[in-house]
Length: 418
Image: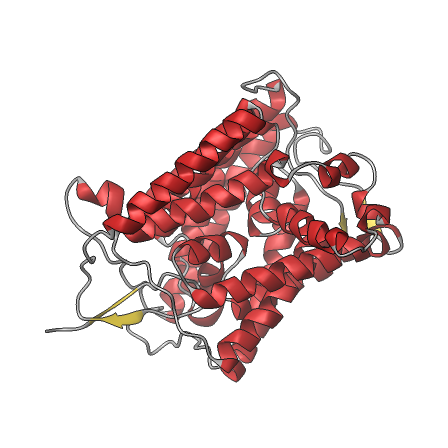
């Protein structure tokens, strides 16, 4: 039977060889088990928490399902662009961001929310902390096998090595929380800059500027792609007809729109955009506190964060979103017959340890990850989101030379697919 190359489940590999591009049969026992776990978690949240948490679990499920079905990556998108000039996935980012700013602008301008609470975007300072953290994250995600969202959906898909990445992501984020006051208070930084409120443009003007920037970036990727004669992206295993909605590949442009809409729904549901890594700092700090470490004295856990540390993790909206993403990806992988545990070896474990630590620490310094800083920051019209993207690309470029040391491949211009 003729073989073909398809996109892998995680973001650390280049296209993998398969006998065909068809999906396996649905793994019904896993699907049933996942639905039972989801139902139990939903009931628990409804009993112990407010309705917001239950809605966020559903949004998280949809986020995870979308990420998996489209293999919507940030790590692989940056790597393809920096190695061989393929900008297809990066252009999907621009579409996602264009839809997001279009939705975020009226929400932030008029304070729309489902439950009458305050609504605020992610607008963070620009300083040494951001520059170092975003660069670290860029290196880390290329070694760790995925960004923050990629780590969660790969864990849901059964990639065993990503559990290592997630563990050290949590450790790195916890250490970063402990060190954060040094980076933000003792080192130079400018005040947060919003393209909407800090410039006099307003949300309408900031929207126009943002759309223009996204269009320019998309055009640059097309020019680079043509000049470098970049290899095309490999397909994702799929099926046909209506079944594709539930267990087939989704086009990147469709996933981009869905993710932007879900992020806007998150903003109106909890009053803040989608985020991931603050929950990692919480989980790690809770464990450290259990073993007697006085994490409550850290500067990171002062002020409004103090109540978050003392409350149940299920009261934390980011934790609930993360659990939803993992479960949604699990259901998507089982629906496609793709869930399986992957093999571990010394090199990929070492890469995951280093990558996870770099991402966790870097995310705390940079006020977020590819979701909170890049996606959420740019959607919120924050200058720091754009700077995060540039520095993460720079970190990706360095990581192209580090990946082979751990047995990780790098796309080449002579490849047929990337």
